[in-house]
Length: 329
Image (cartoon, rainbow, N blue to C red; front, top):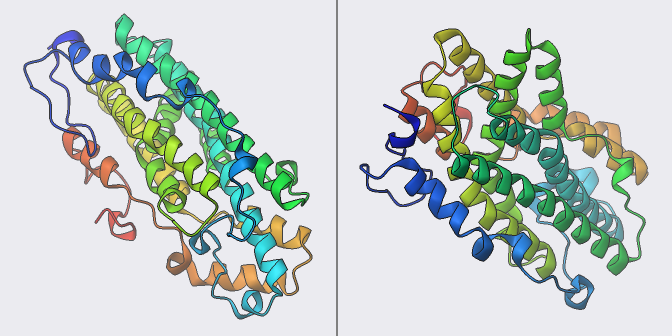
């Protein structure tokens, strides 16, 4: 079956489409055609400080892995509030790092048709639109961090934080790839995981009605775009997957499993930097205790969309990942 006439898979959490409709006239055409109406980059910008509410916390408690630790609970209220602000800055930097170092390079590989699958114009347009969206998401999250710094009057620079754990995992995987094709497959695997799972991360903020409205709105607008991107990523990854030989499929699946482990993990390196910069007493012990708690303290990652994608490929059992460790079970 040709690419132009392959029935589209059912994208995660989106309505089914007529299986007889060619792919370029279904999911991809609909999403690329609606870009001007749905994309955050097409919306007018607001003055974020106009909506800043200083009495509200900057991020949900769930983003602080040490939220139940006695040493944290003994801190003065201002110190706790500063750590919440840092949680929001770290959240934004995490998102920006992923967009710049994982997602955009992955979409660029597809837009360049690096796998020789013969993507048509509409498919290339969809990948390129996604890249434009991701650049704007980076700006959105940077602006939100800048608004927090201005609203609080606190110096909370991203430059004091390391690259996100997910990005460091991605870089190591690329370094270990044995060939240019393996690097492309690895990048595709990480990008696919990022685009189909990032909504769960964004919803940790978007769904919390107690925090800063501008922070919640930033995450909500980004999440809306990502629901569309997850469909685009799933479609494009499927086109590539169907054209791969067994060895290449194994490489792709192993990179996806590695990415899922990275995306579900708590970024202790970032939190260590934050606690040390703030001069938090017992910082090392706090991090050590939280590390020892293991999966009980990890931020749950919703991998239902990825499981659905793997089911459509008939490779759920072939992907070397323990599904029981996530809420996708």
